[in-house]
Image (cartoon, rainbow, N blue to C red; front, top):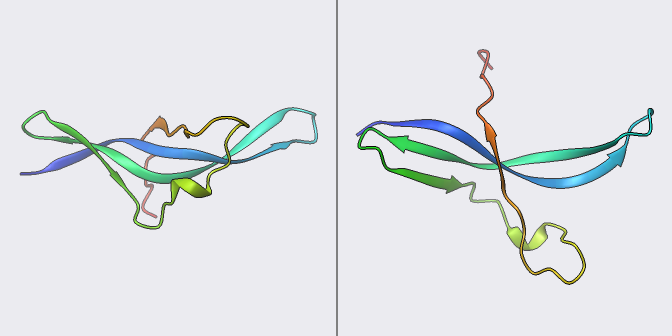
Length: 76
């Protein structure tokens, strides 16, 4: 069975303000969503990823994992 990576999974690890005063976020890739040739989808998470280390808003006990299109590798 073969699988194709269809999405990247990432968490926001930091927010900063750029020199134009715009709020920006730094994202860390933590895994991927896959599509098997049988049509089933699943996610994999990097072994180093510990969700307890991600900052949350006060009073929340959950984190968001965002889904992004796969970026081309460009031979790297």
